[in-house]
Image 1 (cartoon, rainbow, N blue to C red):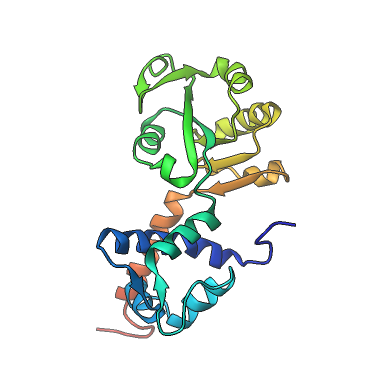
Image 2 (cartoon, one colour; image 1 turned 45 degrees about the horizontal axis):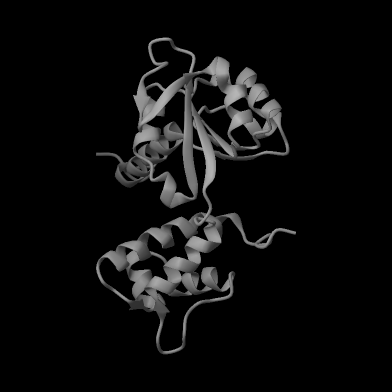
Length: 219
């Protein structure tokens, strides 16, 4: 049984946001905070924050609130950020390069150890002090270097064949930017899908919903 097996997905998805806000509070020298003060900063209700944190045992003290440093550390532990899961990135194009360069892997539980591409123009270049390797060598690399996860920054059409190769190697954990549903292909993997277009469309909806006139309105 998983330690937090009964925790709902929405609560888990809020944990990184708690971690980020608490980190900002630490940077500003704030040592303790109440659920009410935290709710004002995060746009959640104090009740929701208490309920979320109580899922993991609760960390506040009556009349004192939360130790910012202590809560930040505990949430980091719940998220598993003390780990250093070895990770490869596949696809050294514009998206892959941005994902490689601008993520704080070491602070988020991962260590980027390899970058791969099949474009001769990209192979041999350096990203984040890692030399982009030829996809032909990925099996050998993963056999020589324990690899826990893969980041996919390749076109959707390339994923089925690539996924079969990675699955055969033994990789079961994916951060997927490809828009291909890996979980349909394999039922025993862990995958976090990142759909940037979906996020942009949701922004479009929210703007439209805010600005569209009420139904039946005429000028």
